[in-house]
Length: 93
Image 1 (cartoon, helix red, strand yellow):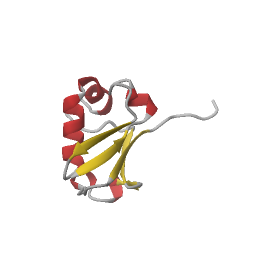
Image 2 (cartoon, one colour):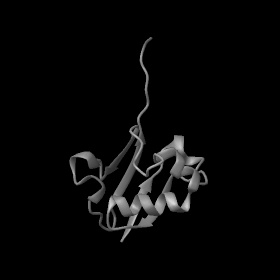
Image 3 (tube, rainbow, N blue to C red):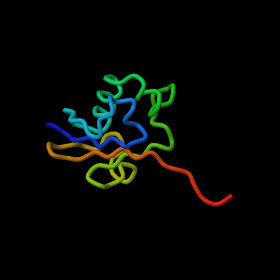
């Protein structure tokens, strides 16, 4: 089942400047494993040394935050859209 992954501009340089990639995966965990195994520098940007997702990276499946679904075990189906969103700090100092 092919899933479309939207890559944010801040991470595109680590994935050959692509804004989307297609990946075959059944769960978010499998998708992330495949994505970072193909792009080692992306792994360093998205994952901690122990393999967990960095706190400032958010993952959405069809615009729904996986933290409110089944997290990494969220099931994927063909045609789903997974969006990677790095949090951006800002404000007035």
